[in-house]
Picture 1: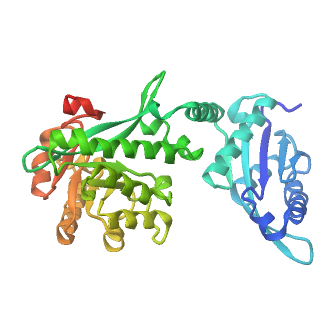
Picture 2: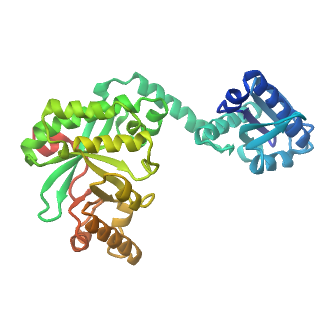
Length: 392
């Protein structure tokens, strides 16, 4: 029996099955066994090793066991990827570990094992070689599992689109709307931040997203056009997983044709960290949507990477400057300088600009000075059902 100051480590050898593919399953199992015998056990000879499957082990050790501190230190420093030798040749292994240190968690042995498994789960999800458990980790993962189960039981009618107005800087007239997915649950209406990552993890975002895209384009063709005019647009937020959907371009093309809308009125918003790598399925989707005539918009500019590469290599039409830069525009000289540089680049390349996160009118004069075309934020309206804006 371990005391509350013990440590438990969940070890997954070859978690991504690269060694299985390269060497074959039986060879990978033998390599994993050599790794445990040659590398792990010598570090902490008094630790207990429990084999859980061909490629997984559970290591338990108390603070007074020889090698306790050395094994923990090794997990931090050098056990993530390893080369194992059988004398004739060397083989490469990925190794992922979840570490639960009793002194940090104050848990009994059974709970330590659960915390180690939770940490291993996070390490695998993040694709890092080691993760250390914290007291709330098990609870967080359990909540994600519950949320995933809840999502799988949901149907299309549980999801809808809210809209936030985008106004023209010249006259503050509403010229378009950003469409924002909402999930209607028994606990209330949830924004994507509450469920997006889980939906992506279980591959439900693509069908949910297609439903939202269809609703937005239908609304554009009807109520939005009737309320805001024939040139009004709707913007669609597409995640990395959606951009990897090879059928998405055809799907949106069909919707545009069915509802007879000008494709330029369909803005495609992508975060600047989602299509940095060119020649990927995401970049091909962006190019395909541009070829349809859709307006390509880089969202959250300033929150991640540089937009220069997009302007050079992708068919970008609109830049949305992130709220973190806009919020301090009046008071921060550095933010002001960055936004000025972005505006000068946009002007030189013929790109339109949207300022996000406007919550008061004190920045509007600066935005006008910098040549922004559009603005969006709580000052002009919060995300609401379309009926709020159209009265229908």
